[in-house]
Length: 366
Image 1 (tube, rainbow, N blue to C red):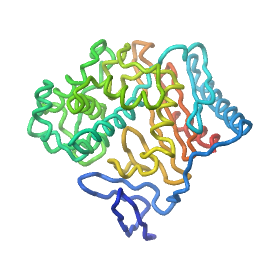
Image 2: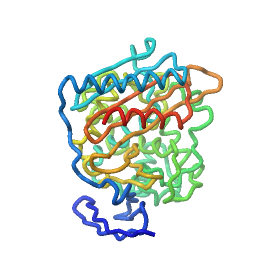
Image 3: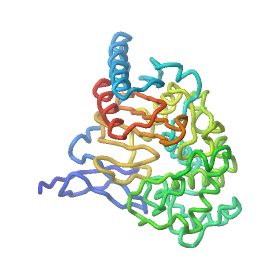
Image 4: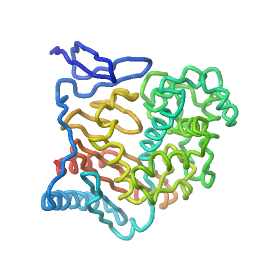
C-alpha cells in the first residue's frame, strides 16, 4: 500500500498525518473530520473567477444544453434550472411554467439548516460539541424531552448523520402525516429522542431526516425564534433570497425538507454560503464533517476534493406512489470557481441519474 505524508489545517491546529491509503477519518475535539482525496487535489488555489460576458454566455449555453438533454432523457415535463457565477445569477430556464412560483427543494433544505445553526451558534454559548444532555432542559421546555440514552449525542453528530438516530421516523407517510403543521419537527424530535429513534450506532454514518428535524428544534431553543424566522433572518436575507417559504404545502418537513423557492433563489443561497469566498468553502474542516465514499458530509452538504477541484453539492427528492404532486426532485452544485447550478423538477428519479446530471454539469462549468 502506498503511503504519503499530508499536512492539514483545522482552524488554528495543524495536523500532520501519515496515511497508508486515500481516505482517512480523524477525531478532533469530539468532531468526526473526514478528509477527502488526500494527496490528490489539495491545492488551495480556489478563487472567485470573474469572466467576460462572452465566456459566461458560452458556459451558460453548455450547462443549459446538458440540463435539457438530461431532462429529455428522463421525460421531465416540468422543471427549472438556474446558473450563477461571480456572486450573481446569470441565467434561468424552465420546462413548462415550473419556475413561476416557489418549488420544493426537499433535502437541499438540510444545507439551509446546517448553515442556520452554524450562525445561531455564533450567538450562543453552545458549540458543535454541545450534547443533547446539555440542552435537555431547553428541549423539555419545548415539549421534546429527551431520554438519557440521547444525552451523549452532539450537535456535530446530528449535522453529519453520525448520531445513531435510526430508524428514520419521518419516512412512510411523510407528506401526509405531517402535512399542514409547520411546528411538527418538535414532534419528530420528541418521538426520536425519547428512545423510539435511537437504535443505530453513534459515530457511524447513517443518513436520516430525523437528525435535521432535531436540529430545527435546537435552532428554536437556542435562538428563541421559530425555525423559519431564525433561518430567514440569518441565512436567506444575507444571500438576497426573496421567494423562500417554509409554510407551504410541505412546510411541516421544515429543517430536513420543507423549504420551497425558485431555482434562482436557491442559487443565490448556495453561491453566498458555499462560494469560494465563503468561510465554509475555504475550510470545510473547520465545521463538523464525516468521511463518506470519496468525500465528506458537512453542514447539510457533500464536499468533494479541495482547492480548484472542490465541489459542494446535495440532492433531494420526495417519491409518492399515490400522489403525483408529491413526486419532486432537486439538486445543486457549486464549484471552486464560484459557478453554481441548481435544478428542480416534478418527478421522482433514481439517484444514479442525479450523479449523471451533476457530473455532466460539473464538466460543462469548468
